[in-house]
Length: 198
Image 1 (cartoon, helix red, strand yellow):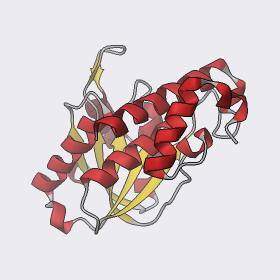
Image 2 (cartoon, helix red, strand yellow):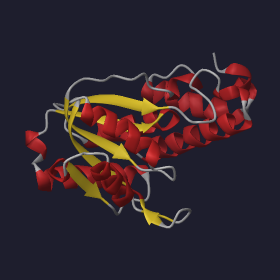
Image 3 (cartoon, helix red, strand yellow):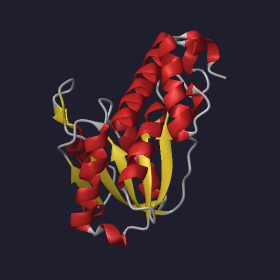
């Protein structure tokens, strides 16, 4: 069920693309369930509130679930910092070994995050040596991250998902708030644009 939004022409277009290309049945499917397992590496996608993905990644590292952390995110004009560098500093302060951290500080959009993370992994450990990866992103962003990673990384790499919720809404009540509807629509539109272009 697509809540009460299904009458909107924009939602119908987005759902049509998602249904045909990603076998998605509703907007709710933008929220990818967590799939967590011991992995060689976690790719951590930056955001304005970079402490949130850092906390999730640090938890995965401390539990031994992620052996290494790759922080990706360039200069954020809202907070005037490089997201990946701030997360790396925070990780070291939280006890993550610097030798277990990779930093990709240039990307300013999700496709660049993934492409640059791929290159960073290839240079540091060799993509052929990577068997498993966990993606760390906010819950409403995970579907697009998943799609781009699946189209970029080799098929032998086992990909898992470790999301964290918005502080404003969850994956089950996002449609009840203006912020949730705005975020989910924006994300669906970005995924639509990516699918059209790729």
